[in-house]
Length: 45
Image 1 (cartoon, one colour):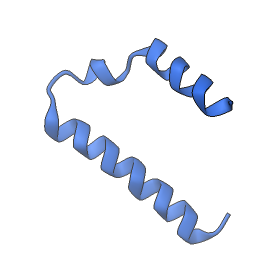
Image 2 (cartoon, rainbow, N blue to C red):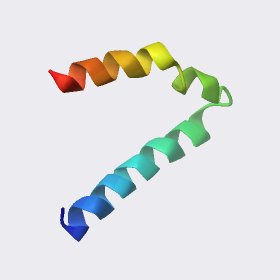
Image 3 (spheres, rainbow, N blue to C red):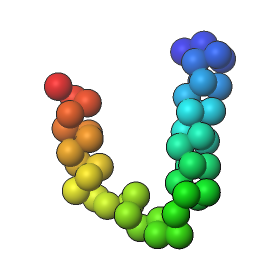
Image 4 (cartoon, rainbow, N blue to C red):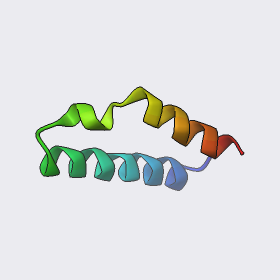
């Protein structure tokens, strides 16, 4: 994995976390386990 790929993934994750922190006070809505399972199942196909 190249350095640019690693930095891109970290930057993208940081943007997601930053947008959640700035847009809502209810962070638990983004930590819903069944939602993660659905996304993980979709990515494995």
